[in-house]
Structures are given as C-alpha cells and as structure tokens.
View 1 (spheres, rainbow, N blue to C red):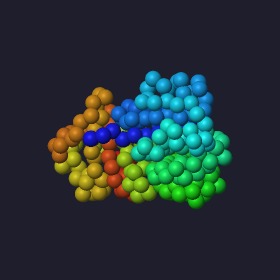
View 2 (view 1 turned 90 degrees about the horizontal axis):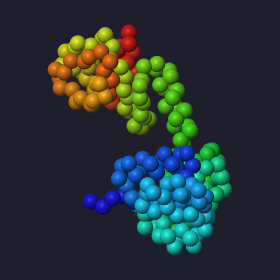
View 3 (view 1 turned 120 degrees about the horizontal axis):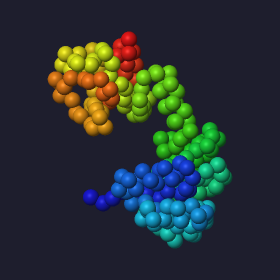
View 4 (view 1 turned 30 degrees about the horizontal axis):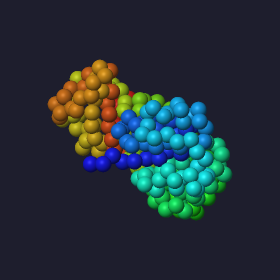
Length: 221
C-alpha cells in the first residue's frame, strides 16, 4: 500500500506540529515556506522541504504540487497570502485542499474558492472548545470530539467502579457508552467483562456526549 502524500504550506506553530505528527505517522511530507530558516528547521525530518513563495503559480506547478494527495495551507496571520495560495491551488486542479482559517471572513472566501467546509481548520477555536469542556466537566483527562454528537474521552476511576468489573456494573446497558481501554501504570489494557478496575486507572471511553456526561456525573457522585 502506497504511503499518503501531503504538502504543508507554512511552518508556523500549527504547521510544525502538523508536520511532526504526519512524519510520526509515516506519511510522505513535502514542506513549503518562503522563510529559509524555517525550511532548514524541518528539512531533515521530511521527504522534501522547499523554500519558495506559495503565491508563485509557476513555482508551485514546477515542484509538482498537484501530485500530492492532500495540500494543507497552514500559513500564519497573512490572510491575503492564504487566500491567494488557495486560489492558485484550486486553479491548478488540486482537489484535496485544507486551509487554516483566521476569521469568518477568511473562511467564507476560501469556501467560495471551492474548499469544502469540513476542510477548514480552526485550531484556536477547536482548542478553546476542547478546553472549555474539560474545565466545565472537571473530570476529563483527555477529550476528543469525534463529531457534534460523539466524543472519545478519558477519566479517572473512582470508588464507584474500583474493585468491580464491566459485567457487574452493566455500564454499556445503563449508560450506552463503551469503555474501550484502561491505562494502568502507563500500559494500555483492553478490559474483558471481568477485568476489575483499580485505583488510579485511567478509563478510556467513547459514546454520545449526553451519555458520557451522564456516566461521568454518576462516576463522580
């Protein structure tokens, strides 16, 4: 199976985090930035790192930007640069374009250029929502929103479940959630129906947001 190929345009904080994770996941990554120092910073970790202006259509065509499965416009606060880069990518025929957007105006413009709404990246907004839910809940260790209705979370075991197991607690039938794993002493355990929970277990579960809230409220009473 061929590795997926990605071109990331822009090496700011978001772009760098994205590049590092794509590389860790074994993807083939090309990085583009007009700042040579930034290109030098990532050159050794990626397949290809090129210093050029992403608003130069001839330069993008010459490096074969259309041959990549996905192109991510991860440029910083220069909205005009991001919009022009997106326009050029669409004109060149790049189908799978993701864009980091800075504002509603920015989002509306790139949508009109043909970028799918679910390909708009709102890193600050997403982090803000995630943090708010963690703070309000007071008990989530990690929180990942899968869509508007379902999430993947982890929380600590409490006296409600310590020493008991899934068969005894009937958690799935009572709360309609699935406990998919336990992190215990930095090791992941896939629990059977008779695996007892222990103090300091990190319980990893998935389900609808409403059901997760009901379960964690019961867990922490």
